[in-house]
Length: 168
Image 1 (spheres, rainbow, N blue to C red):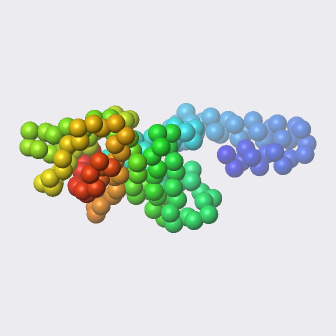
Image 2: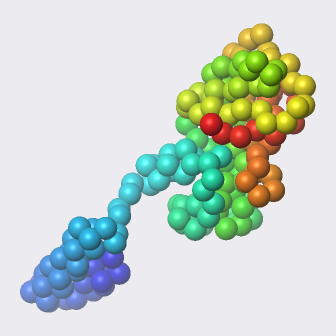
Image 3: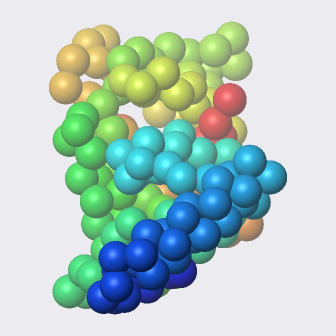
């Protein structure tokens, strides 16, 4: 990409066209070989959120540049269309999702919660904390934050009890 952009500085039309042809050919080869992938920003944002809760770490190195230029790089936030907000670490990884709309909540046979978010993600309670199932989930949101290692904590707006959760 740098080579292609550098071609714009050439003043001679024939040199600029020749430079752009070489750079475009190199980009095409890299894409064909699988060495380069071009992704629209919105698709990358959706993909990053969809990986939250999975055993995928280090996505900040991939997606962090999408959120560069924030005034406070240590607490970069990004609001999604559903009203939820991602809080990021200094390296760009999502540390927490706040205000994620909930579609459904039920208790499994062992009394642990199974929470379905509005985007279809399913999270299960993994600890033995007693958390009541709300009768009506309309307007209920979830806050999900990273714990140590690969653990996550969840808190529902209907009951402020914090519990461990894992994504299905």
